Amino acid sequence: MWIGHRTSNEFHACYQFAESNSLQIAFRHSLRDALERPASTVDRIIVSRNHRGDFDWNHVNLLLGRYQDAQGMVLLGAACEGVRHTERFAVAAAAKSEAASRLSVYNAMLWRQQVPRWMLGSAAHPVRIADQKITVAVIAATLPIAEPLLDIASGCGASAIWMRHDDSLRIRNLDRVIWDDSVATADTRQRWVSRMAAIDPTGRSSHAWVANTPRYHQIAAAESAGVQLVLAKPYSIRGLTQWIGGAHQQVATQPYREKLAA
Image (cartoon, rainbow, N blue to C red; front, side):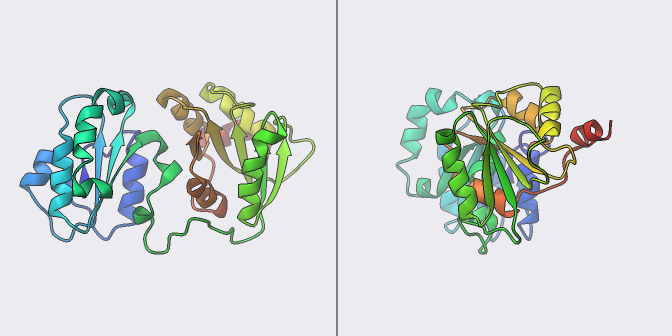
């Protein structure tokens, strides 16, 4: 069951992912609508929230209580960044419910970082080994910063290298590029396009960005340029290993291809 917005940039990718991993989706406009119009055989409930208006956390628990086998997730849009603090007492009260143990709360733009196992299906595994040998470049200011990422990549069966700069002269044909914000700070869409083209002139690599609490517009700028995965520190190992193993691999987006063709 999907409740709330599903077509905006913040939520559409998650909705598509849920749709591709479900036999059927029951769509409801609001929590009240979901309570008044129950559906049968619901095992996953996702609530998208795009504003700080009235929101009853107890209604979420009531919904989960109605579907005893269901797991739940609340996606918070950019306008809701502060509700974890401003609504902390309501959240704490709702957390005392039995159903609360089946509920997770995520930043909508960072849902890929920690995809719940129940969204991935029974085949999900915390570490996904790449189907074939791949090369992962970690671009970070220092080796201590890069080392945890190098270890994660090698644990996925990949060859991993550390680079200080986005320099394509010393290496060719990278499969994955992980940008740490010690080198790749938040920037404009145009700067991201140039940055990615510098390390990946053939346009064959998949790119990820690891940053300290990136904001919505910063994530949107990176993704519009072709970055496939954005992780907020402290990041989820599972989200990163799924991407390295191929779960998020895709063709670079149009702005990136146009830059390479120019």
